[in-house]
Image (tube, rainbow, N blue to C red; front, side):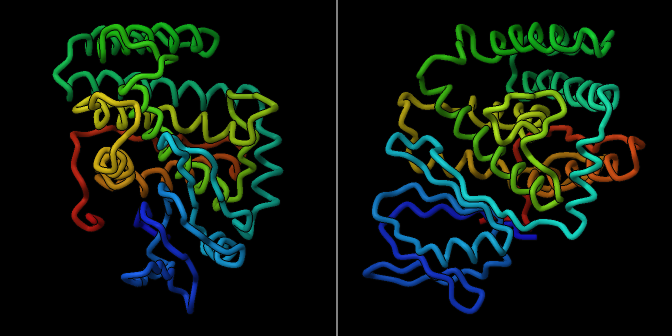
Length: 301
């Protein structure tokens, strides 16, 4: 699986030749092996890429994200070809009982709240113990109210006065970072053989990626830690901030007490969900524990 995140922000012609991504402009030509790439982000004007190149990028299991003029994620290209056991996995995914879905969703939200508490501690904010107390008596019937109340308190400790519906620098950072994570989860879910429209908890018939919107929840505090360190003063993110947020995929996290980059952690999480589905509801999800911001040396760019 690829491990590099590539951002293209200058005018360029993009081709694929002999397993290499070729990025050419008037001054230079750069070659990058397709097998090294997990995500390509196109964030500039006059970036031209042929349909054949897009097809080869998708066949290599690489996702491609397009950024609009405000530097907000606009659309994604994700691979359709995925796993040789795709039909089996999708059938079992469809057959998950409501009890099994609730069981998985409860695990996800408990870890999300635990990570929110850790994020406050890592940022030196108050409220970590208060947020963690929300996990003390969790039942599946109360999980939605629990998550909503924890989130309300969490964001006020994270950034007092923050309204997630506002158009401001903090929300611009959060939305960009969440989009990068979501894109990586969609890619991993499709490559593992899942139908991403079929969620565990999210069930919006207009949303093609309900499953990704379930699985992203425990990872969001990782973006929060990066975004809130220095959100800047503009809703239009500069290149340095975009790179910093995109590198969330290469920061360290813990999965089963093993340190690994977030991108690998997402694949471990999705793999554990696949095992749960194939084994008819046995086993636990492998969910992340966030750590202090650290780029893993093996993938530092």
